[in-house]
Length: 150
Image (tube, rainbow, N blue to C red):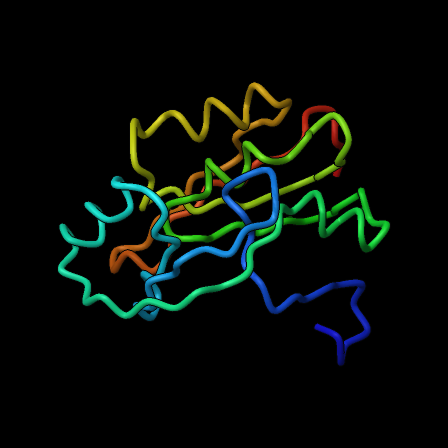
């Protein structure tokens, strides 16, 4: 992204599922790695038969990162954190951050399937498309901010 001179930013940290910075335990598991900070996450890892391979990582709320970059408008946001998507979204003050479009993974969510979609829709977004692939490689919902024109 940087070599193509896109206005994109990268950070060597994780997005916090809390509204504050935190050191968290992360279970490494290729594309099913996730923050392990509650019993739901531990139970999910156990149910999936994933081996315990944990490291400590620094996490920051998305809002803190955007403030540090002085970038409160986001054209496109892709969120795939293997099950903590709703928790990460709940840390975002949508009245202060203008995210125009986003894609959010939904397959590893703990709780009711509709919770994530309902939350984002209540924050002023239209559910444009739900995508899934036969092999489970894609399980995302695309949201567009209401009133946004092409």
